[in-house]
Length: 215
Image (tube, rainbow, N blue to C red):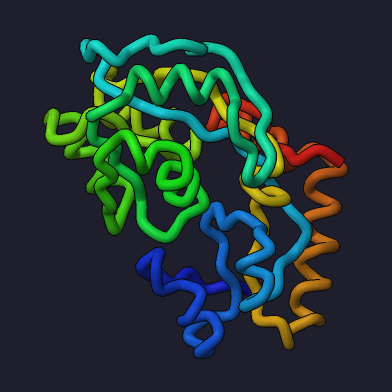
């Protein structure tokens, strides 16, 4: 398959896919039941944790659970690590990229104790975080690991990394429901890339962590 790359605003990608402006979405798109009602998906090619980020010199740095990993399921409440973060982050401003699974998580778990500020892109949010206009950001941990390099060490993780089915089944390619032949071709390519270690090797090279989904 020969592909042409097309840039699109995040919050308009799914409508644009269904309108035929392009054929596939590949942009860390989490496979969720809600999105499955609108578009089709390939099998997952990656599964990444999510985490909070803040300025290294912030009083919120190294919040409870920093360096640990917790597993969560959709709708899960009463998680002690999250309750500890709610106490620490009360009254703070949290930046999120709109229309993501991470935005929903922050609204569901921190919307009653913090000010939530939406951004069109992660980069816009990160700039405000660096400049002290917000206190925290929440996003894909692999994305943040790369963003930290651009921030010249001014930002870091705080609190635990969060994994599990709360982020859906993993990250897959979004494809129109009717395009089953195209979906099947990509599924075979993904299976091959997972089996021969290509996904692992590329993710270790670029992200320094293996993002291969659990088989």
